[in-house]
Length: 152
Ligand SMILES: [Zn+2]
Image 1: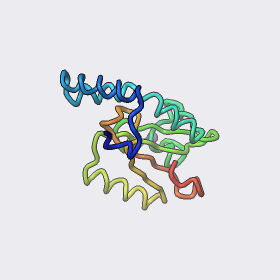
Image 2 (image 1 turned 90 degrees about the horizontal axis):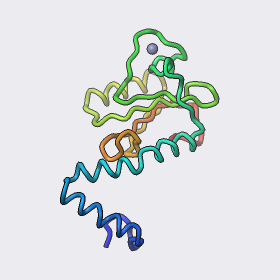
Image 3 (image 1 turned 135 degrees about the horizontal axis):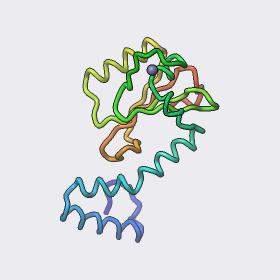
């Protein structure tokens, strides 16, 4: 019986993993289970995102939000949110991501204002790779950048 697989039954491997995770939960609680889940999926999720959207991490010295917004650093850098990164596509700043543990009202207002000011799309999903299961993935891109591919 599964709450998340619809009518599908657990495979043999899933059943074994579920049993192991339940034992882990009994010993270490939800945090222990979440940490193991995060270890199992983090690198794969990051690599999948990068491959799917044909991205490369921007060079470390060009990761500030300025490069995303203006193409060069203006000195008044703001990482916008925790665990931020800038990705290039075809050599140009393309997608800014942040993976915060939470968003409060002030954070959300900041992103709405930024999106309105700079014609940005902002999406928040649960598909983060920085501690999956604990963080959110925010993606920010310029509204006219992806055409039909609306949500990178
Ligand atoms: Zn900057």
